[in-house]
Image 1: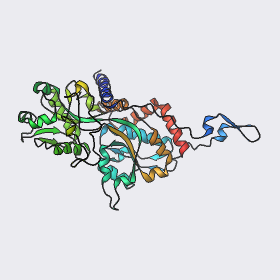
Image 2: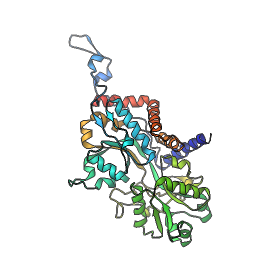
Image 3: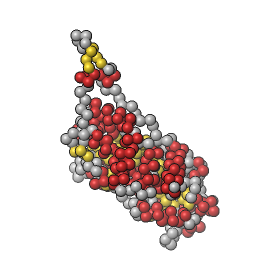
Image 4: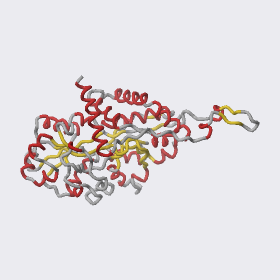
Length: 393
């Protein structure tokens, strides 16, 4: 019963937060395009006036990927494991022989280079525009990583909500409204100095993700010299933050949705989203922010009373969660390209998966089973995407 309650609360809370911040991020699955007149008509009259059988007109290869090996991958955060499993399973229905994405788990920097060089064919874990910084890396032949890759489809548009959360009781006791305020107030700096080095601690991200770089750019561009980001294993930082929050102690933690982490750190309940202070403090593509990190135009998130300020400048633009694939692979496999361009996963399904994963369904078999369950539950849409993919092969 406890796990069921946590799952329901997480689904409702996380989905409502995303919907309020940037729109639900959900769209009805795109209908498969009609590619031939034969798809529209049950039959066609031939030259002698007879009706030609529809099956004779339709000579569609049901397995256009047969004989093609696909090397799939996934990023090294568990909230995206299901996407990789779903796309791999759908490709297998098209006849492709797909490696288990669990065999190729990478941080973004390594993952994009591997895709650019052809070591990997695709993954479904791109967060744009944040990940665009990795596209600027130079390969040994002098080309850029991004020259060899395409970000494709609208799997979860404007669905990646990111930012810092802070202990709610500490906010209320100290009238905290922003991260800038904490940096400028010696008493608040001391309050959040958890390791005694004279700086307020912010639990951020592992060094090989992207959020750590963006968080550091925020701190550096604003001259917030009284703040220090901790970069460590994410689950360890979450455990530390959760223990402090549950004890009513000061804590600041980077987190995101869709994820099951917000079933534990619940904005409006035991934590609040922490605003930077205003749009003046948000990355604007000026050094030390990367060229692709211009998050000001997106405006503040509408997070209501779950944020420390009514205009909640979380520091990130709500990300498009998308597929990225190697250009040569896409050119050689139009069926896969069509599938990538059409397939969508709802935010609420992603949150559902993540909560279940955090509550114990966390083996590789569990991930594959949840992906199969999702495909079965969305069979009509999946069949439309696969049909379109077969007609493009």
